[in-house]
Image 1 (cartoon, rainbow, N blue to C red):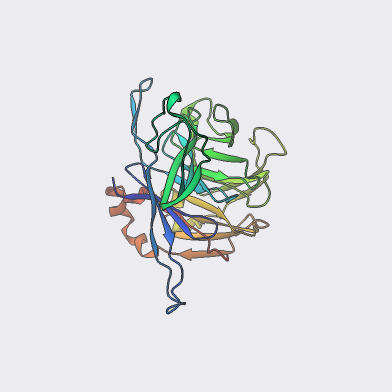
Image 2 (image 1 turned 60 degrees about the vertical axis):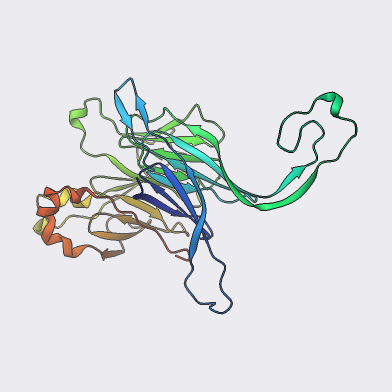
Length: 327
């Protein structure tokens, strides 16, 4: 239950949220720089811990829905509070993280312990005052977005308009409004009429950081599709298709498995995107669809061990990638 399943920095890097297999979210806050050691590496201490998801049971399908947190995404900060989205396989939740260091005292109609006072005991009019208290960090659920995905949710991404976000499962991508919990719009559907004809699944999806109409999604075949929501309500046709030609001499039984993309991220400028597969990280220029501009072999030493990794299912492990805050 304590095994971390996802991590996510907020936009400033001051907060780090982690989700685990027990459905908990733990938020760490970066310590202020020490004047005696201004160049020391940042340390993060626990800021808030809360239970985001509980195990559920789907009685219609007789399936248990585990509480494991699949993804966390921060919303850009608009005021003193912080907001984040967290999701398990089926349900997405919006959380508000806020601080309290004052409490109100001197109410007219209730005592300090919160109990209502009898009207005949109110003999004078008092003005409530704020008193200092120890800092308290509260996590409160604001929205619950459910019942929109038949398959397991693998991605959520907040749009640059700060009002909408997308969620993706193996076969569909839905568009949500942050204020509307009971309705979403299907923007990608790759489910064939006959499931025996299914050749690939969606593995990750991400909104463009500046253009709210543009998003990308990756597939288990190692391809990336860029879609523009201005062209059609249902983005069956992509605007761009990114795929690196396969070297026939290096083809093997494991080629399709290790080419599956497990994560895709736009650069902060929006000009590039980064993808992660089992053995490598690739950087793509949005203006060049036929091959990546950079390839980093991060797990090349595992290529000779793919057979044993296949036998113990480790070859199906998923890895994430992340851009530096300054690109």
